[in-house]
Image (cartoon, rainbow, N blue to C red; front, side, top):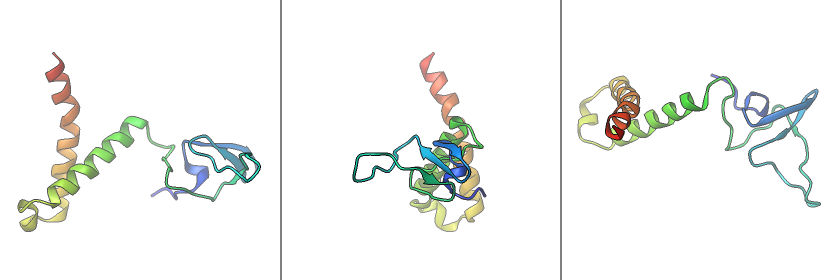
Length: 103
């Protein structure tokens, strides 16, 4: 898994060795300036730059389906790996269902 540091984030702009700026929600200092961040800083807005936004959306949708499935009685008797497999198949099917409904 990629370390969730600024240097691995799609929103970080490398400027010089070990330093850059955040393009998502940058920190602001007391003078209203956007200070450099170190390449090994991190925040809650981190987004893996090695995957596409579409892949990231699919991962998030899979996580949401898994959480929803885990709140059902069905999940009580189901191995965790199967819950994730069902969640992934539901997330992958969602765009197809959406396209069918648009036609």
